[in-house]
Picture 1 (cartoon, rainbow, N blue to C red):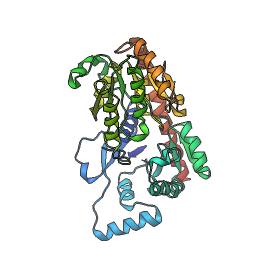
Picture 2: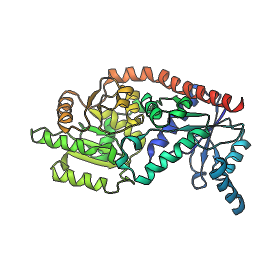
Picture 3: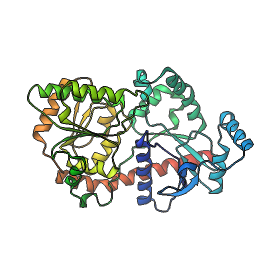
Length: 382
């Protein structure tokens, strides 16, 4: 089988990049006979890539580009990409919402239905666009991947006519090579951090719900309890450009500036070091599709304190606790308990259990994807 992985994410959404990397690593470990390709645009085709490269924007004159634009709009087929995939005898194109020809199966992936649950965080035009375009995407492909039972339930509500095409594939996060050979304390001096802290590695986007954490910290400060929180992630929310400014204002207004470190985007290996060194990892999000940070914590054996979303309960990280993301008092109580009881640094017993379980979890991830691929190929060729 020859599989082409499409471009995913980027500077504005690192979760997409991480998703593709996790899938690629799982396939290389447990399906080494698979030939993996990676579509890239002209701008980064010469950059460091983990798989064989297919140029996404094949050369063409102005007339050919106009014909391709019409084909995409009317026939739902990208002729340029179809030609590139055919030249490499690609069997599977993932993820894609356009036809890739009679010999290549396009599989679509929808991470979540956030626009259904939090429509006020999107423009009216964006919500209308999703409502109009997504059913057409579902119609064009043989199968659609969702990342959780929670997302599949949303799919049933949003597009019941196509739910028979959905397949649940829960991704698993890999652990970087050599992770356990490094003392996680070594990263503390890089960012001038204390030994004990809570780690909150969410993008600085409004639905990630940072403010409930600061409200809880204000409540605890009034009781003389002063936890320290380290935050990383993309500092730009394109939907709400003032979000980070509002965060900084509240941190200052509530007098907790000396209890917070905002680091922005950091190397992914450092994320894992901070996970291991923290007391626990916090995710107060109002919505998730299948949380990457939860999977990373499961893969290395780290306790979490999570908003009580259905998908967080479905992910079920060991020895973790849950709170109402709309109730800072509930969070404050659970923060106080966890801050006082959980020591800093790795829990060696939890890490050992996680390390032992990770290969089998990753194998199931790879096998699930390959099963979906084989089914999609059968659909388009029979």
